[in-house]
Amino acid sequence: DNPTAFTVHTSDTGSSSTSAVVVGPAIVGNSGYYFKVQGINAHGPGELSLASGLIRTAPIVPSPPSVPVVPSVLGESLEVAWNVTANDGGSSVFSYALAVWKPRDQVSPQANVADKILTLIVNDTNARVDGLNWSTWYFFRVAAINGVGTGSFSVASSIVRTLPSTTTTTTSATSTTWTATSTTSSSS
Image 1: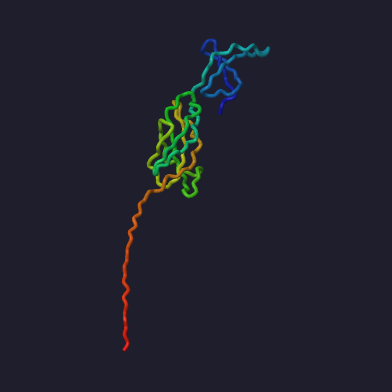
Image 2: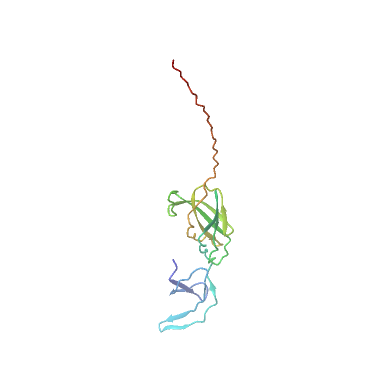
């Protein structure tokens, strides 16, 4: 939760301070602010001071990247891609966490009933996920990672299915030949 009030401590000696509660808009990470001070006493508020220099708050974790897409299904592998995050949080994004999810119900797969089976750390906005099962449904979510930490995961990709197993069936043909025999009977 963002604060709605702040305590400002002042001191002229550096050892003891006087504090006051200040109510104002929330201050958020990775943002710049200018401050003005106004004294208040028994006669009312004084004049506002000149604005301070720009003061930046600390960086925060990045926002989620775009929804991942699966441009290519390769049997037991899938290619997954996404766009960079819109907000790096003030610290450069250096990798992404790609979470691989498998729906529990493979007949009517749903993203809200699934197990995370793998998380890959990748340094690009696409990855090949190998070692998946044939004819199995999967979906993906991705989060950006910067110097502060891992941001929230994206919305889930569409649920996609790996290709069916490529099996070779050999059929052998059997040929049967028969000859009808004829019996002749004679009567006397």
